[in-house]
Amino acid sequence: MKGIIGKKIGMTSIFDPGGKQTACTIIEAGPCVVTQVKTKDSDGYNALQLSFGDKKDKHTNQAEKNHFSKASTAPKKFVKEFRDFAIEKNIGETITLDIFAEGDKVEVVGTTKGKGFQGVVKRHGFHGVGQQSHGQHDRQRAPGSLGNSSDASRVMKGMKMAGRTGGDRVKLKGLKVLKIFPDKNYILISGAVPGHNGSIVLIQK
Amino acid sequence: MNAIKYVHEQLTGKKEHPSFKPGDNVTVNYKIIEGNKERIQSFKGDVIKRHGTGNTASFTVRKISDGVGVERLFPLNSPNIESIVLNKTGRIRRAKLYYQRRRSGKSARIKEKRLLESAAAE
Image 1 (cartoon, rainbow over the protein chains, first blue to last red):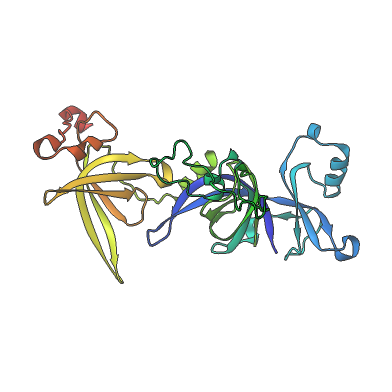
Image 2: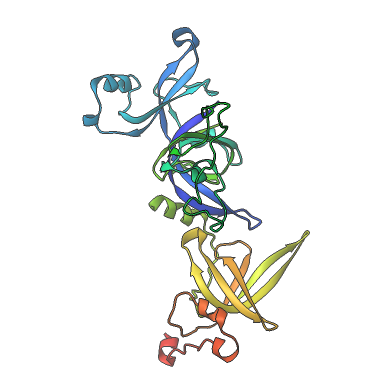
């Protein structure tokens, strides 16, 4: 596995040489500093800890300062671990977008936009009643029956109901790398990516 | 937003089109690929809308073809647009000329905006 931490910038579209227009997301990814190398001997598994995005000294506690000084880097905002990294890196080295090439299929992990408390139509894709007449009164988006009658006398576990929606960690697979701007650390990925603009996403392959 | 601007600058092709506005009469020469043959089709009509900025900008051209109104939407930065020719500039008071859809015949004409000769010479 290879990966990098990035920040979602926004969406635009790109033309291929044939003139086909594809929607894509701009992500500012890397450079990430390797702040810890975990090995099977010392930690029980192989992983690289990557850090991204500077933060101010006054927002960093002493433990974090010591941790980052081991990699001789400024304190970072976001720290993520990637298991079984395909490229061998030492502590303090950086990872940039050159681990990906244009045309690669990648996975993107992010946190979806929070929608608050939503009903079953938005949350689970229920169809609602579908008509306004024939005695529907004000129940066009109601869930309807919750299940059986006296022969259970309870609601089954996992019944789809209204509730807090969005804000979940989501992984999208099979997205394509359309273009990379190495000097600005921008990467264009086909389609939409979870989260609002400015949110942190992981790109991995 | 600067990042999006930067990406648009990198993506937008070098092709220079004349500046045109809604109400203008233009001819769009558009590449069409049939099998492995390529030919150019021209579409002449009035621009009724310009939409978007940067690489995603598009515009809509409306013409009357055999008495039937035809509208076509072109992505401004599409590599398939061979050229855009500005035929006439129109005198209009709206940015979006959707009212043209309800009109036909004489009332559907857009008055031409005539520049003063001195201004045109500059």
